[in-house]
Length: 225
Image 1 (tube, rainbow, N blue to C red):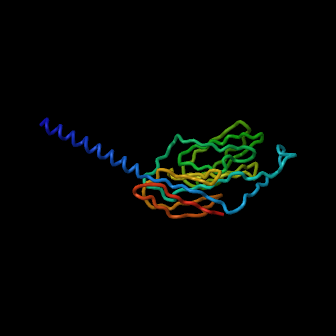
Image 2 (image 1 turned 120 degrees about the vertical axis):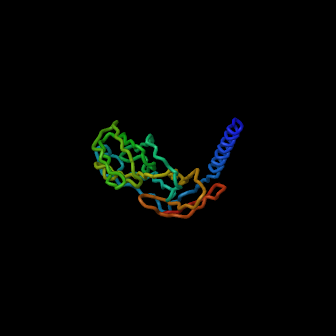
Image 3 (image 1 turned 90 degrees about the vertical axis):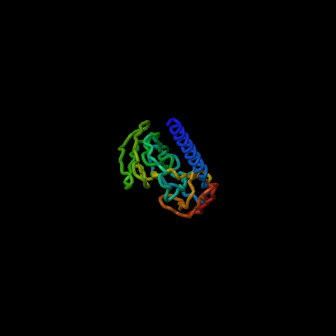
């Protein structure tokens, strides 16, 4: 009887090792999608309304950085579990939201600190998340949790030229482009996907990509207007 028990334990241990090894192999086949998003139009300037803080200065500020967001339109099944501890920040600085585009996962809390001398009133009427933080002064901060995927447009009720975007995803397969337009999405399981390039409120281009069974690097560039 003892012999059979020992034999059973050995079989269980071997099966566990095989399972772990197989899981490691699957994880090792993940691929990476990377590329560059190129804008085919010139930069624009953002006209500001006059205010007491800007008297005597320029009323036009060049838009230095409005990034794109590249993401998988449909993520692998079971690819994401909400992280209730996730936190991000969108500052009010020089009468501008910084960053202009924020990409987060469902469940993330976003802080909205005011670093300007003037009051701000941050709000959104988007279906994915509606809120109105009311007026608050420099040094104060208010927070909002984003529990639904979608695009949230953020405004200031006092300064009509202030606008930003928060993209809320139900998965982790997305990336915000850097100052040179480059992006990278890592740890993508093998499969066929639709890759989307979003810019300033709209999906500008999509393309099909395939991550092979043996993983590897996949290049995907976009040229958008």
